[in-house]
Structure formats: C-alpha cells, structure tokens
Length: 153
Image (cartoon, rainbow, N blue to C red; front, side, top):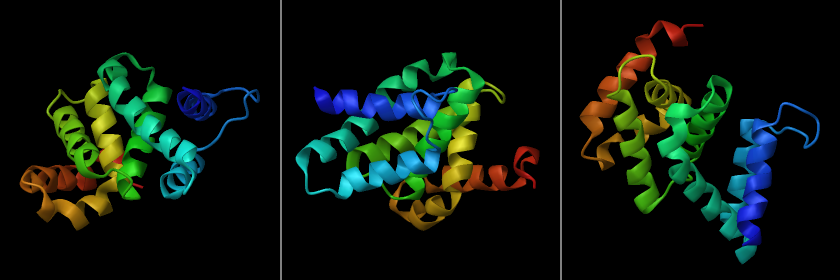
C-alpha cells in the first residue's frame, strides 16, 4: 500500500502549483519512473507499476481534467512512450488510448490529450509502428501532428 502512496506524492508534485510540496517537471517524473522500473528494489518497481496503473485508471476522468493537468498528464503519457517505459499489455493499451483520443472531435479533452501525448512521443512511434497492426492509423496521425498549426515553432 505504501508504494501507491509513494507514487501519489510524485503525481501531487507534478501537478503542484505551490512550493509545498515542491513541484517536479514531467522530465523529472519520467526520470523517477525510469529509475524505479530499472531498480533491483521491489518497492521501487512497485512504485513504477502503480504509476502506470494510475495513469490508465485515471484515463476515464481525462475528459474532466483542467487544461493544465491534462497537458501535464499527456506529456507524461507521451514521455513514457518516448522512453520505452510502456511494455507488453501497457504498450498495447497506450496505443489504444491514443488512437481512441484521436477519434474524438478536435478540441475535446481526449483529443487534446492524444495529440499532446503523440507529439511528445512521435519519434518513438516511427520506431515501433511496424510492430502494431494499427501502424497505418498511427502514421496518418503522425502526419497530422507534424502538420498541425499547434505544433509549429
């Protein structure tokens, strides 16, 4: 049970707008998750697995997330993909979550989540697109993300 509490602290710090708890960036959160995944300590591995599970359990509430928290969550989700931290069943579920969001009307929370997550991890999709039967859909959406005005620098 403490592992869940541990990961909740990291999520609170990610979403924090104050100095108590001190905020962490998405990349710092991803660094923590990477260390926990690769750890030899079971408690830390549990923190990693609970963090992944938390993201998927919360997915049904993303439609209600405020814009800032949704953006941070999408960046985290895409960052997990980018760093190859989704594995096996979680990898398939992550693909589905992004594809499902991309099917929603433009501008909705799930669509914004999917586009933001996809933008964060678009290089990773190119590397693994041949391992998933949905690669044509993903490739199409990558072209959309690359050409969409929101992502022009």
